[in-house]
Length: 247
Ligand code: BGC
Image 1 (cartoon, protein in one colour):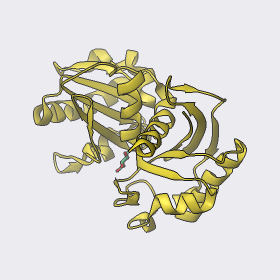
Image 2 (spheres, rainbow, N blue to C red; image 1 turned 180 degrees about the vertical axis):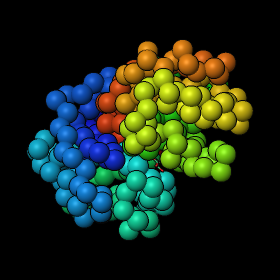
Image 3 (spheres, helix red, strand yellow; image 1 turned 90 degrees about the vertical axis):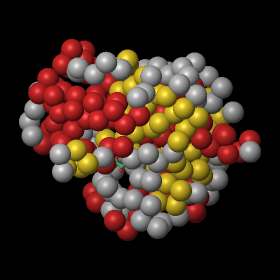
């Protein structure tokens, strides 16, 4: 099935048509900067531009950086507060004139990694942590997603984990990957204690840099870099729209 996958991120909004059988992108990914403040109408206009770029009139699946329940945003950490309570699916459907399904962006990346990437055929408890502007999480048990876990907002030493251990925090505090890894290691120990995962997959921008910091991580759980890199959110968005159409 061909579905347009879109990944709404803190710095860019990216999309490409995806073959959901193989996970392959059917055209070069198209990226537009996330509008400043990331307000609903401005973001919806960008989503529309991406659909227009591909001349799209079919199903769209979209990863979005917030808690998403039945298409509705329930949180807003790195996007405008006015998203809270907004029906994101209805808004994007109205702007694109296409049927749209929306899920949390880290959950989208997780779906893609479990189907086509580092989590392929892995059972037990698998946790995907995406390290970017925010710190995202996707939790799987025997291949089933527990959505909206939001483990990036765990409180560690009285602080929101994301504020300290995201890639935005690394850049803000001008840290080398090695120095940042000390903070990330504390975070990994916390999630390991809470969930005893069998595997943790590191996604987002950090997945490309894992060779720079992996030897600084002291957790005993198996760690793997995400395989689908920047494309995981796009592919996972498309997969999500496919599963809803089947049900
Ligand atoms: C948001 C999550 C999102 C993550 C990665 C966090 O700030 O709360 O919903 O998955 O950033 O974008």
